[in-house]
Image (cartoon, rainbow, N blue to C red; front, side, top):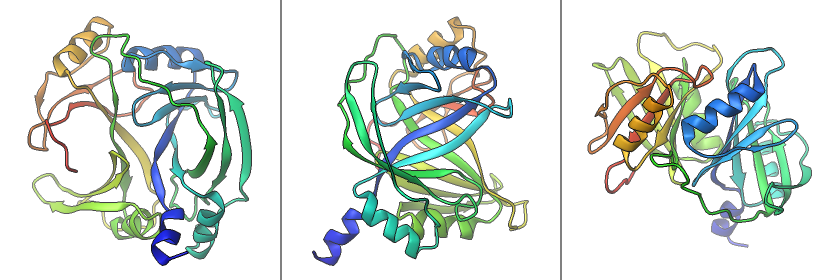
Length: 274
C-alpha cells in the first residue's frame, strides 16, 4: 500500500453527528423538530434528526444541564485510524462494534471509539466507521426547513493548541486562519466534508490551558425568507434577516428554543468554496 493509500485509510471523512444534551428530553426533541423542520427518530435513550450532511442526536442530560456535548466524525478504517490516534497521543479507547436498526428498518453497523477529553482539550470526540448504513433521502416535508449544517463553532483560549488538534492530529483541512481586530477574534476554519468546524479565539483573552468548549451551530436554509417565516410562526424569537460576514450570505439569529446553543440560520451563497 502506498503512502497516499495509507493516508486515505486514516482520514476523517465527515462530521457524522453532533450530540446535544437536554434536561427535558421529550420537550427538547419536540423543540428541535420544530427548529429544523424535520421529524426525529425517537428511541429509548436518544432522538436523532437526520439532515443532508449530518445528524443531530439529542440525549438526556444526567446533570440536568443543556448544550452541545460531543462530536462524532465518520472515518474510513477504524483499525488504521485507531493506530494513528495512538501515535498522535489522542489516547483512543478500544474500538467497539455496534449494530442497530433505524426506524425505517435499515441496518446500521460498524465500529467506534472515543478520544481522551484531555487530549482533545475538553471537547468530547468520537470516531466511527460504518460497515453498513442505509442511505436516506432528506425529506422536505416542511416549507422553509433546514437542509443541513453549515458550521459548528468551538471556542478556545489557546488557538495554536486547537490548530494542532484539528489540523495536524485529526487531519482536517484548514481553509482559513484569520485574525480580525475589528471583530476581536481569531478565526480558523477546518473543512470537514461539506461543512466547517470553526474555531474562535477572543483576542481579549490571553492564551491559557482552559478547556475548549463546543459553543454554537449555524444551520443552512436555501430559502431564508421561508425559514424565517416558519420559525416566527412556530413561536421562536428570531432576529431580522441581515447580511452575513461571508460575502453572498444572509443570516438571522434564533434567540430561544435551541437548548442553550447559540444558533444562526444562514442562506449560503450560490457557490460555496469554503
